[in-house]
Each structure stands twice: as structure tokens, then as C-alpha cells.
Image (cartoon, rainbow, N blue to C red; front, side):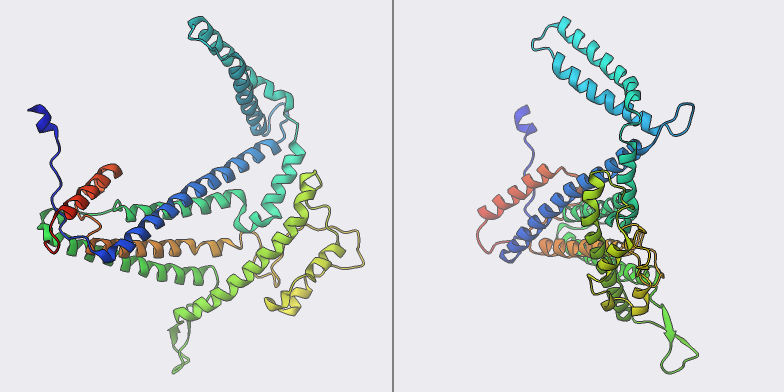
Length: 402
């Protein structure tokens, strides 16, 4: 009797029979979610790598002096030595049997190794300081990462991208923020139309946000004019059309990508030198810089007089400069320049979320998504079991009967 009571009741028949035309949308939704899930993993790993690299290089490049000053290098080396020594001792002394005596001895040895490593880090506190400092300064000040604000700036961009990917996946799973109190009092047949209406309204709001954020980025970051004299009356101001602002953005983005390509060409030359310990800002002479300038069509993006100002005097052949691009004209700084382009990740993410709402609405209309107020609180495996049960009910029911 208790076994019969413990069997969960089968789910009610779906409110909307599954339609054949919705099956390709199911495959699209599944493939889309799979792609975004993989992107989440890779973006998360990239963010961890960027932040760990930044912290490690900051620690290794910090010079410790007795009596005060920056101790981050000493702390970092102590922690690294402690972890490395602890792992080595753990591998060498790990007991093979289940002896309590051996387990206690192993624990004591590992503990001593970990504590000892904290002090042994003092022995190599000056090792690699100059090399790490040169590498970090190149990454932060004269490499492609300089255009996005360095390693920490890269981590910030990855965080935003990760949040948008998570929001898109949550929307696809129906786990987005949702006020469902009204839905619980509606008849079952009314839930799908009301839910579809809500999702389409949410998609419309997201698309409005796309336009709004893109317009703000164009004005704030790309200096697109917000107003201009009205054609019929020059004494009055009229709003500049959204398309006109995007034309300015498109041109500026093209210039930014050109500068990115030029910086990459410098990085290809600089990286092998930095790798062997050469000062990143001590190898490029005036003649090499001028030759590099002639290796691309700068005139397609900037004014000739602004390009001429980048040419270094040839009567100083031994003078050196940093292998970092400059923005011709001097109106913009090269450092952090590409951040304004990366800001479009946000409206792009909103556009993807809007498409997710539309896709979910179509799946609900075609009967491939359950509209249930409690579905958002279920685990994924429970939701999948209900979906399988719905499929069995539909397969068992006569054709043409809803």
C-alpha cells in the first residue's frame, strides 16, 4: 500500500498537442543551448586564466626589500613554494595501505612541507623579478591586451559575456526572472496564450534595449552627434537618425580593427624578444618603426597629415620607441581603445535573449514547451521526465484528438 502511494502521479496531458512544424525548432533550441553552454565553459576558463596570469605576474614582478615595501612578491612565492612542496611530499609519502600509522605520518609530513614552503619562498624572492616585470609591462602597455585595458580589463569583458550567456541559457530553460502569481490562477487552456504574450513583450523590451544601448554607446563612446540643426529651421535642433549614428560607429569600428591588426603585427615581432628576456621597449628603432608604418594602408582610415606625424626622425637612427600603436591625430588614446567596441557585447547579448524569448514562444505554441508555473523550480532531469511522459501520452492518443 505504501509502495502504491509513493508512485508519483502522471503529469496531466499537455495543453497544446505537439505540432510537427515545431520539431526543427526543438533541434535549433537544443543546438543553441549546447553551443552557449560550451561557450560558457571556454569563457570561464579564459577569465580564470586571464585573472590568474595577472595575479601571478604581479606577484613575480614585485621586488621585495627587507624592512618594508611591497611584500606581494614574497607572499606569492611563499604560497607557490608551499603548494609545490606539499604536492611533492604528498606524492612521495602517500600510504599504499590502510594503516593508521602510515596515514598519520603522511599527514604530518605534508603539513610540515606546506609550512616549510611558506618560509622557503624567501630563498627565491628576487628570482625572475626583472623578467616577469618586462613581460607584464609589455602585456599591459604595448600589446594587443593594452587596447582592451590589460589582463584585468580582459577579465571584466569576460565577466560581462559570461553573464549574458547565462541569461540566455536561463531564458531557454524558462528559469529567467518571472512573476507567475497570475499564471497560477488562470485556467490551463489560458496559460499558453498568456505566457506567449509575456515572452513576446519581454522580447520587445530586449529589442528596445538593444537600440537604446547601441544609441548610447554611439553617442558616449564614438562621439556620434545626438542632435543636428533641423533641415527646415537651422535655429532648432533635431535628433540625429539612428542609422546615421551607426554609420559613424561602423567607420570608427573599422579604424579600430585596423589598429588592432597593426598591433598584432607588432606583437608578432615583439613576443619572441620578450620571451628571451629582451626589453620590450628597447629593441625597435626609428628606422624599423618607419618601415613598419609603410607596411599598411593607413591612408584608407586616417588623414595623411595625421599619419605623417607618426613618422620618426631618420637623423636619430639609434633612438628606440615602444612597439605600441598610436592613434593618428591624437584624438583618442590607444590604451583601452577597443573597449568601446567590446561594449556592443551587451546589446548583442540582449538581442540573443530576445530571440530566445521568441523561440520559446514558438515552442510553446507548437506544444514542445510546457507552460507550468512550477516548471521553473524543477530540476532539469524532472523536466525531462515530464517531457518524455508528454511524448508517451501523445503517442498513445488517437491521431486528431487533442
